[in-house]
Image (cartoon, rainbow, N blue to C red; front, top):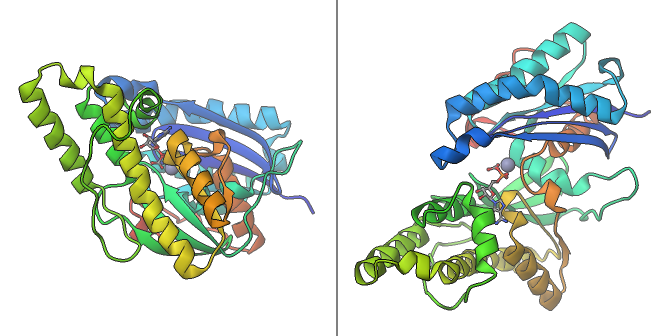
Amino acid sequence: MDITILALESSCDDTSAAVLKNTVMLSNVIASQAVHIKYGGVIPELASRAHQQNIIPVVDAALKEAGITVDNIDAIAFTRGPGLLGSLLVGVSFAKGLAISHDIPLVEVNHLQGHILSHFIDLPDRQLPHPSFPFLCLLVSGGHSQIVLVKSPLEMEIVGTTIDDAAGEAFDKCAKVMGLPYPGGPVIDRLAKEGDPKAFRFAKPHVEGYDYSFSGLKTSFLYTLRDRVAEEPGFIENHRADLCASLQSTIIDILLAKLTKAAKEYKINDIAIAGGVSANSGLREAVTETGRRRGWRTFIPELKFTTDNAAMIGISGYYRYLDGDLSSLEVSPVARLEELNR
Ligand code: KG4
Ligand code: ZN
């Protein structure tokens, strides 16, 4: 029997709705919020308001594009967390309203597991490559940097995680001090192409096991700017591409060192990357190249599945629905991963 899922994602500053028929994505509509650009970061209160304005038109468009109506939906999947509480609340409340009014079951999804399972979305005209279980996923988003051992669509174990900032935060905060627009990751990616990755050296962390740390790198970047600007007032403008290239290559080195260690020690050859930072062209190349040398099968997501989207919530919801893991109408959003319990 075919299962049709309507999925909603509203954890940060993108309002998204998608329709999946089993694992096949029929639509994936994303409204990005431009209101935050002038503040250089996401303003939570403005994000919730924009979600409220966007959610109905986005869901309508997703249903239309998929060629279905609300009556065809078997389950509504939604992001329960982690994310901004006010933003999550809009998606959760909308999901509940629709569930009550049309008597449709609800399925809650962990946003981070959604990023990982985006590797299992198929397109109407082609199958995308799927990793085999168990595989390791480097999950790098704006708020999280983790190495996850994925045993099945429902069973994941966090092997390593950041003890302070996430990789995405390192990109965004360093971009901000260089006067670059938000989000900084894609801008640094573009500028880095023109620069020399060996021009500057920044601190690399020494953390035990598989955990990450990026706050030392951020501080070292900041101190370099401070010291060099004192000697040369136009330093940032004059060396922007080199700064971006050196910062990006340091972040990639840090990410890959632990990923490589985990792959070796867990003896796993299927290696995936996911999350917003997996859009980074340098990281994509470095993972592919390392994989070639080490005999990995590497899984690099299509760009549209790297940053926040509802299709990834839909695929996670699909597997939970198959498992009979439905949510009650009492479900409430949670901001932090630790409160999510799944
Ligand atoms: O997964 P995501 O869309 O949202 C969260 O769940 O946080 O990730 C957003 C993060 C931001 O930090 C953004 O700067 C980063 O992904 N990002 C990139 C690139 N595209 C997005 N970082 C580096 N290079 C990129 N091309
Ligand atoms: Zn995300």
